[in-house]
Length: 317
Image (cartoon, rainbow, N blue to C red; front, top):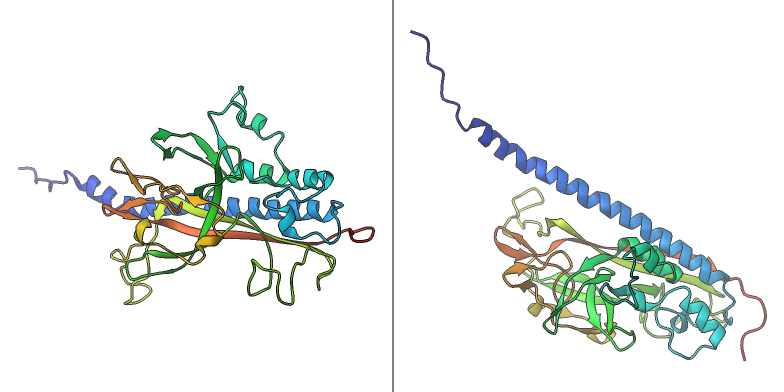
């Protein structure tokens, strides 16, 4: 009699189940960190180009950075206002894809961005397509990542703010601090004020004698990797129980008054579906891990550039 062969039915499935987990982690890591590097490079180019252009534009030597970016507030002469608007315009942080005045009939994104300001064109490759439900209406938006906020400064009523996570409680729920997309690098303890030894580097009257010192913030949130906290037992111990919980209702804001707009009340879960890497009221995202709502892997990238201003002539009277 021939010897019977041991049953091997299902072995390949078991082997694949074991190998696929490691394979998924490798693929997800390659996608996440590949795009992370791409975003960091694009952000640094945007900062360099913007700072260089601002350094060469003939603004009055005693202007403050806050008069120029991110919002032209109507206090500048027409010529300087036009120069500032050619660098950055908050209007283009959020574009309604169903609005013919914002999006061309050709449907080509390159046609839509042809007339955008310098910095907005540089940030365009880093924008996302979002489908939030606002006031019972599903919108199709092309926008900068972060929290979608309402404002009266733009024609469509939307802007973007970036919450920086400064801490988490025992459940992984965040404490956040709001920062704008574009801000001046300021060494004061109160960066929103003009007190202290460094009132405004941009002005020729400052201790720095006229610097374009700007920072661009970009929240990177992975669509394929979730966020977990380290295990208290040690760095290499299992941490599956220590999720970064997606709980917008329990978030603590350190500087709510400095947010660039008002929160829209967007849910983290809509119709039983988690709203993705940039969903929710704070734009911090919601994913599923072991059936629970968790935050995506997240890092806020910053790119900085400093140029000496090229100033000719006396300060404006």
